[in-house]
Length: 557
Image (cartoon, rainbow, N blue to C red; front, side, top):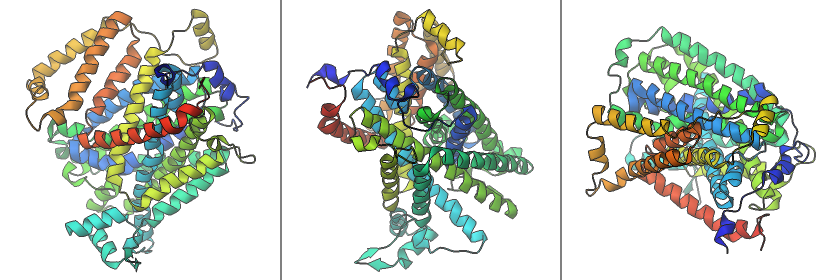
């Protein structure tokens, strides 16, 4: 095994022949910029809005809006890097393809493996959240499902062990037993996964029309939530603004960032876009701006309506209107949540098969994953496998574990995308002029030689002024402190290295800021999250060296 072969890069010309030129893909090219923007909104406004926002507000208080802004800035820089790649390499595969062009095969595989966490595993969390709101919606029509059909096995078992949680205890006590095993599973979550898988299997055009309708509905309802909620705001609830300090704000990073990962899914639809080099960048950036404004306003409204201490629930929007006695809004919120999360499931379920399809073309996955259905023009086999990967864990995992697992994998992918743009070979003036003439996106080059070091110096001065114990705490190597400080120590090392490279290599400022800001968000992840992520990567590397390395289309041995 040659070390050089691990970092062999895929030529852009080969990638374009596989689908980027529009002639070799086999997929239906039916999406315009509006459709792509709506797919981005569909993926972003969902579980993070109707479920995860509650835990984020509970952790950070009203100051959680600062975290939304930070995540939006990080994602904004990252979206521009995605847009740059989409303009140069307009094919399905998302960050996986981009890493193959810039870093080489091993990193491409790692990203492809990590993206399974974003799309497939992320959809498990959305399915659980969808089920909770759908069950509430059924209750308004006096339709009651047995508790053992509305909760996952692990949550019910934990409730029994802890002897708390009405639903979980009822599910454990009343569940039927077959062969000594209690039958407990989340039926609505299983059913919606099956239905979404079928819709995605049938075709992109059908999925597009369904998604667009749902986006209109949920944006209208969220606007209604904001308008009605504004009449119940008590400004005293915004005090204290940062009740748990800045560490409390950062404690919600998994929940907040989970809301933003959807814009990445737009890039997987490149080969079904009519003009991907122009429309993909616009779709990603438009959807990110729209959703950021929605998140900030919504966070201000709900933390103004009730104390942040009451928002640590799985259905915060329903909870606040219940506390205020606005019962008719409970029904509206439940409908909005069901619609919103259905659209997220749809977009994520479309993204994963297309990444596997691209990896299969490269030989890193079995060839079956690259098969296009002759009638529906979709990656049929990969879509079915995605449905199974999402559906089976619903029976034995819970939403909290899935949430942290998904966010860390996505941030890791974002870091490599930003780093990949920094490593791209500069284009000639002729190529840049041609891209500009055709309306293709390019990141404006701003030399970071002096700007980035000045930003780092200013950051150190501000930290030392307003958080004088910061560096003392970070460099505390006493027992029990080292493990929790390790992510921040690694981040500081990254900052030092990138400051040196920015000065010596004249790096482009925008992707550099994207890389550093995403690295900072990673410091908010717990050590246990890193441990599970490490195990996941090891499993992926084992698969790569057993199958992918020797079957790669770039294998010259």
